[in-house]
View 1 (cartoon, helix red, strand yellow):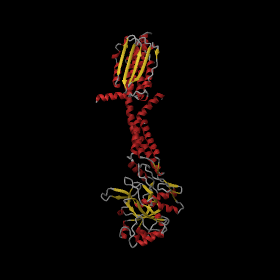
View 2: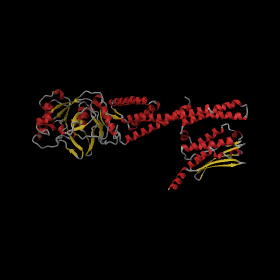
View 3: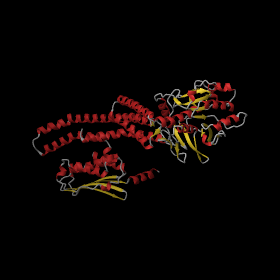
Length: 623
């Protein structure tokens, strides 16, 4: 493949790739405006659900107060006396930490003294409060010191589902930690790994060498999310039963082995659906909840105490076992990733000209993309799947169909050109060849041979023009384009050019600011070529040829002058060239004029107004 063929192929690829670039731009705009956010959340949830199954977390035990426990106790909320008994029973088995995920802000009642004694005498108990929502504020148990009270506030996405965990926030000007973070810190402190944190809530939180990646407003598929305080993405434990859950009744009845409690984090919370301490999720295999109004409509959910357990679990296992914490790329790298898959789709659409091959390749590539995203999620990286998949498939299909249509049109035009040339070759050119065989050496034979060569070169020149299309007139500056036409035309073997003695190279620079469409530029080139060919074909004894360009007072002009005799050009104004020149003049809003001077040659002149001036005049005429 030579250089010209490579350039032709490049032009075809550029025209075929333009629709693909437009698709990439649309996907990026859609992502920037948040139109793809819900789809990216759904892909995020599904990717987390499709991870390999993990074992249950043996460091956490949940004491779930279920419907049967409420019936056994006989009332709700669970009385302080029952809670005090539960705490005393658990403390006998020496857990490392106990978290009470139940509000205990009310202090009235005869059994409160016993609960208060347990809360104040045991340093491994952590309680909760709600302090960030002005419409829902719940005070902590007054018996617990502030350093053993954690925030139970949650961050819910706009689709009602849970994907993030709040670790720290400012409350009354002071940095407060979440319930889950306090329990994780208490557990790790027993292994000589301390919590490290700056003075601001948004500062990085670190345990030893492990820093918890802080959630930002543009993390992953999020767009302008609320990222106040210090939040992390929840890396749910991928297990059908991630935590051991025992009931209140079983603990108080001594049915729970001591080994199950010893050195564990014990969470006490509600697992009764009637209490409604639940969160929607699609990222883990949660409990299925039936809609009370429609039993066929079901939702997956986590109990509040399970949500706390997932947060604690991901922190502890990241510090002690290097389990990945979820991270995201910087915005710039995410868009490089998206654009790269779009470019890959464009390449497939251009290289594979068969629609079926393109569809098959896109299907295989899409599967590979999904597997890559799944694999990186296992390693703890959330990278864009939905926008990358959209750009891959849509650019591939769009480019394939646009390029296919363009190639079909080009093939049809090429076939038409070939058949036309075949008809000329098998007809007039054969007749001309027969005439040449009968003629002896003479000036007429020489002229006919030149005509024969010109006719035979028409096919290649028309083929080149067909492949380049309008790109030549779009990409090349007008002065350079006109000078190229000028040079090519004067190289033709026409009798009028042989007598030229003075032929000053024209300067087309005055036309460099002329604003013309590609069609008008093409017409101007044809006008120049036709005017020069008229000199070469009809001028008699011409010794001088001038091409003059001017730009004065919003008016452009292109003039071709020669000093040859014009006896044979009296009827030139009625030819096809004259008609083309007049059509071009009308298109430009100008005027075409040809003057014949018997002793001084011919002047062929095209004048037109500046495009803005012409449009303004046309608008005023319409008004």
